[in-house]
Length: 177
Image 1 (tube, rainbow, N blue to C red):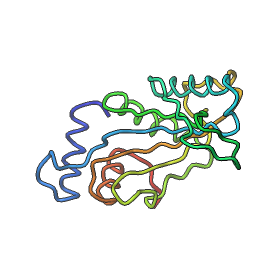
Image 2 (cartoon, rainbow, N blue to C red; image 1 turned 180 degrees about the vertical axis):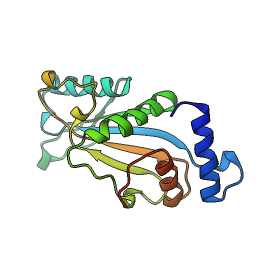
Image 3 (tube, rainbow, N blue to C red; image 1 turned 45 degrees about the vertical axis):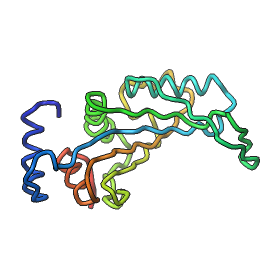
């Protein structure tokens, strides 16, 4: 996906498909955000560190620990407790992660048929859920104690879902409908 010729071909096809003449008006991926909830391991610092280590292996940068803004007694969460981890990828790391996600990790998902184009948010962005982080080849299954899932949000500069769908379809994102 990195070669200039591939990007030029995608822009050319996208320009014809969406009937947009100017190259700077074409939609593109602006960022990819990974969010992992800690869940039941909120009090286990070793488990949080292992999740943090695995996310940093997947993305190439350290995740940020998100803390609870207010206490919720029914979930046994106090203000300031860690509740999740997030990583925002841009530019080269974003494109490298996207390439690994689409070409290596998604084909390894059990019974995978693709994602629905109804997963878009109305503004051209898509959020997908990954149940097992071990689908990525960077994670060795022998060293994993807890399998966790996370959400991936692919943010685009598209104006609507049609533009975002066309962009991701040309970038080989697997859709089933």
